Structure formats: C-alpha cells, structure tokens
Length: 122
Image (tube, rainbow, N blue to C red; front, side, top):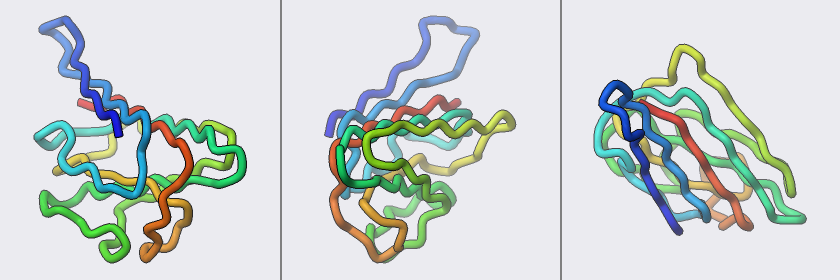
C-alpha cells in the first residue's frame, strides 16, 4: 500500500489527485478526510493473469467491512490492462473509501495482483 493525496498548487483549484500504487484487499478509509466528488478513476492492473475489481464505498462515513458491506460501485479491470471511468458531472461521496479484490462478489476478499488506482476528485 502506498497511498498519496496531492492538491494542486493553485488557490483557485480544490481538485486533488489520489493515488494508491498497490490497491488490495485492505480497505482504505476516508482517504481525503471529507466529502466531495470524483471526476475520473483510472485503474491499472499489471497482474498478467488475474482481473481486479475496485470496490468503492461512498455513501457513508462508517468503515465498511470488506466481504460483507455491499459497495456503492464496483469497477472491473481485466488482467494486464488499464481502464478509465469518467464522471463529468461528478460522482458524490461522503467518505472516499475503497479496496480492490479479484472478483465482483460482495463476499470476495481475495487479494488481487498489482493494481494501481488513480482518482481525480474535489
């Protein structure tokens, strides 16, 4: 896990880039410390054989339990590819919380291979 959150150097922009270079089956909770909106999610899966599914928990400030709490959205990225998801109007969140597993099932807690998650949010 290597989570970084970067703001822009301008006082006129409240946008932030959140980057997790090794997203896995550990839930990263409230990574920006407040509510906001997501405008772009990029997932890079460098695992040669296994898919990755990044699960986002956005509607509550409570800490979800991976394998039990239903995610608000789950985004798929095939093995050895990248995927980009854009939300021009913004995807609102109360707390930006996410984890990546190998399968879509809510009950899945299988750690994926190397998966990077990059978000543009405000």
